[in-house]
Length: 130
Image 1: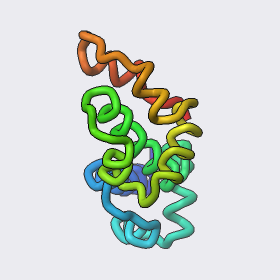
Image 2: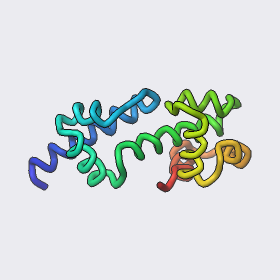
Image 3: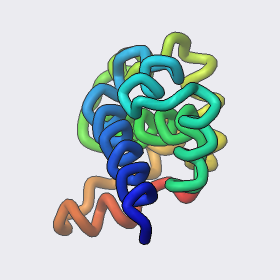
Image 4: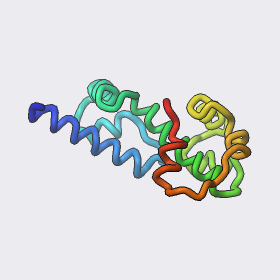
C-alpha cells in the first residue's frame, strides 16, 4: 500500500471515529470533509470506496444501531429514542429503521429479548446488514 493510500485511509478512519462519537449531533458532508482535509466530492467518493457505503448511510446505520440497543434495554418511548439518537422526525426514524432492520421499531422492541450473552455476541448478532 502506498503512503498516499495509507494517509487517505487514516483520514477516513478519523472521520468515521468522529461520526461514531457524535452520531446524535447534526453532521453534514462539508464538516466531515473538513475533518478529512479534502473536498466534499472527494470525501464522499473516498468514504464510499473505503467503507462500502456513503457517509449519510453509515451515520443512519450507527443511529439505528444505537436505537436498537435502547429499544432492547430500556422502556423509553420510541419518540424519545428517535430524538436521542439524532433523527429529526419520527417518520424518518421509523422509515429508516424499517429499511435497515426489516421491521418497525415497535415490532423490533416486541420481538427483542435481552439475552444473557456477552455484549460482543449480541452486537454482532443484532447488527444491521445494510
